[in-house]
Amino acid sequence: MTPTTLQCPHCGAANDRNYTTCGQCGTVRVFNPLAPAGGTPTTTSTQPHHTSPPTTAAHPTIPAPTTPTATPSAALAPRFARDVTRYLCTAVHTDTQFARRAVEQILEEPRRAVASSPGVDLACVLRHALAARGRQVRRDVILTLLLLAMVILMAATGDLALPLILGLLVAWIIVAAESLTVHYGVVSGQLKRENFTPDQAPQPLTPENRRRIDAIEKRDRGNVVVFSPYTPFIGYGRATNTWSFALDTSRPQQGEQVIPFTVHQLNDYLAAQVGDLKLPGVHVENLLLVNGADLLYGVDDRTRAEVLPDTDGPPKERVSPDLLHELREDGKGRARPYLAIRVTGWSGELAATLFLRCALLSDHKMLFIEGSSSLLAPVRERYRIADQLLGSPTFRQWWNLVGAAALRAPGLLVRSPSSVIAGLFAPLTEHRKQRRQAREIRHRTFNYGASFSIRDAASDHLYYRYFQELDRELYAKTVEHRVLDALVEFIEDHNIDSSDLVQRQTTIYNNGLYAGGNMTLNDSAVGTGGSIAGIFRRGQTAGTPVTPGRTGPPAATPPAAKTNRGR
Image (cartoon, rainbow, N blue to C red; front, side, top):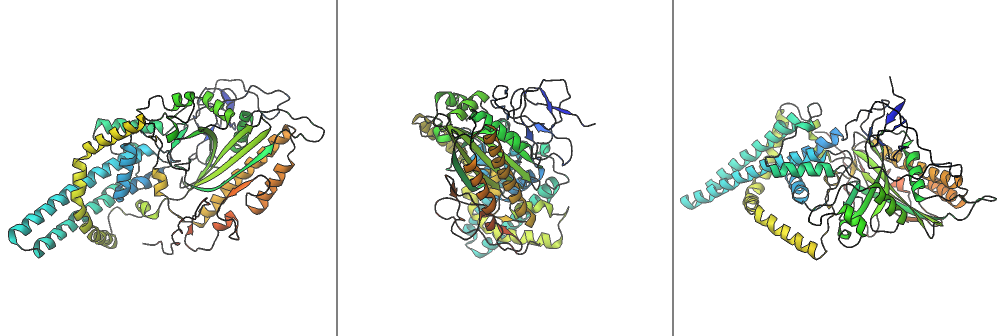
């Protein structure tokens, strides 16, 4: 029997089963992206945000708290998308450079934040990355010994051709054996859809790495995003478009008096209205975004104390609701709270996120609204090979792997000594890096922000299905329409003149462009004769380039659409 109430994972209060914000503690409900459509809704716990006092007749738009009653706790659905996670595990096993970046830029950076990505079991991917790096290091050691034997044989016989031919042949066998082991021992054996089990990922050999991954797993579940690059939305994909506008909230409707409101009431109302969409995979949460270079001197003392209590350690993954409340009230600090509204589809491969920020300025007379949309595109096709492998290779698949190994073997053989030497001197290199970072911290120049996201690095520039392209527009447009509609409703409920806002809303709906009035548009589609949506609809037959909007100089032309996806 379907329960009529759901228990808040944070405070245990009973709420209506369709609730979005807990009436007792204000926790934003998370609609799990992996919950089955039509099934019992499931929730996961997020950091509660500040809620305003119970409303009176003067504030009809904010629901009053409900009375807690005893009810069974809702079962928690899986947090991560299995397909995306196993594709990334495949990537670290089949792409040496990808595995090296994952280990060096995440595991070996204990002072920096970790970029979280929707739908990714980061701890599972990192465990596979460590296993892949161990196997790749062993391969390089064997190739180095082979190269040394070739040099000795050449010096002893005075013949260059025979040792070279024999050495390349043996190197080919070594690389081919490793490739077959990876594809049919690891990928086909552990990462296919029917036998993938994240809990059975290979455990790190050293206690230090085990503790490090456990710490990363906890930090991956927080409400703080500490970024290093210019764009703050690291881990959530490429920015597709940004928009903003200012609205005079001191101008009442004719014959009415403006009802005052707080920015927290508006934030909660928008969260509730968007969560009520009931789209599969809707996820609403409050996040604090801050650049890692500002933690030592750019933020106020309280923010620094909560986000970075220890300057020699990494930033904290979670801050208190009171801090989010204060920073949202201020609206102008370097650490800024955002309402993140994400819709996830295609088993987690497509995730459109709208980052929304509201600020009341000029003695609460001017409302500033900012929206930034990001898109996580599908994972690259070569990382999906687990879906195409059989239990054992056909002759064609065997020949393709062996042939590819022949092309890779000479390069791996030549580069193997440098890889081995780098591994031998790794402790010294790590010691020097830690000393350099400690010096940067003393000089207040160290950036604690994450600069690498596994999910972003694995994303392609192409849609692989026509419906993915349409669903991206469905997700983004539906959320933006609901946000603007809810904003108009909230403004009108508080007797504020909404004529300017309605006019801008109509322009957006009719043209798909953010223009007019005080609105600003940052998108390269302007002047090209097409709307933002038009960029995604230009005619490709087998794959459409994901060409997000951008600011500044034009980015490089995306790769051409793929016309043959068969193997």
